[in-house]
Image (cartoon, rainbow, N blue to C red; front, side, top):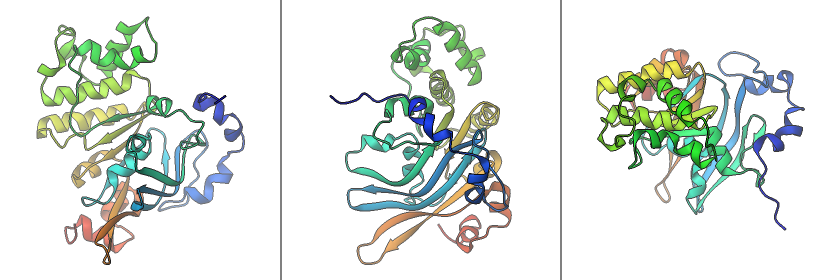
Length: 297
């Protein structure tokens, strides 16, 4: 008989007891020595590599991510930013040839432990994609979809209203909740996607270039929204817009590529991860400086 996947909390019971800030202090150093308490540490990524078949798409990812901060992932195309982002909620599991090596701990729990239910992972770690993707349903049903799938039947009106308010969309749609979401503007659809992710009550929001398909006004609104959501959620964002990363994030990770001259394959790697202000004003690695000043990438 195969044991059913238990919730993450059950797997974590014995793990969290052994974690304290003194154990984490050496690994927590970024640009200055600091300690991250067990309560504040959301992700601990160590020597992470992602493969597609025998091809290593990205390697050497080491990051500590704190709660209620925005972390931006930047770098040239093909450096593995989105691949790494999808690793945080096991979206790469949907690709048959993908596999992960190394450690990716969420609240002290190995997300790739075979006992961990990936569906539960994706509930706790929501995702907003590059292109707004509303379901061909009403605005209300889009937001209520996740809670309904999770079995929630009572209080859906409150969940929908609360989620739309957090996504700064309630005032615009409260009188047309039963209208199709397909008729909304692109910026509204992206905020609806954020509301839909919030409705499942996650702790973390992953955003994969959420503004790339939006005009400057809608982009500014999404950036303002991220700043507001940071009070309640930990946010990771992939962006090609370095100005956006500088505006919205607390920490930034710069990824680059290494080309294998024998077969011309490109493997992404994490070059530098530090406080955003420092990365853009005084990076430690020459490759980072070359990228942000436009001499590379």
